[in-house]
Length: 133
Image 1 (cartoon, rainbow, N blue to C red):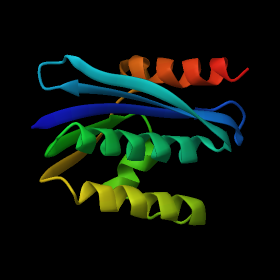
Image 2: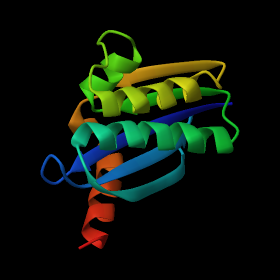
Image 3: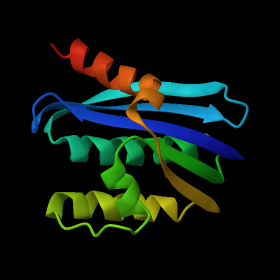
């Protein structure tokens, strides 16, 4: 079974109060899951990786054997596709966690999208941040 994850992470200030947002859809475009989670004081990139990890964990729980991970973080997309090295120590740990999760699927694709095409995941980030106020 293939699922498509849409993820976003954000911090108000960098670092600052941060959250992740995840939307998971089936191949017909039907939303199966959507949620946000507050992460505390973190950087934008930490939040982006946390969203990807959370989405892959949830896709696995839902029984996915293939996953297409769509995100608006060019950095995370290029690092996961091994186009960029991961130099920052905190992100290295998150990259390893994400990579290890990705090996549990038959097929994983990491795709970059423009921010305006990722509004659902972004809205979960903002909802989680607003609820923490």
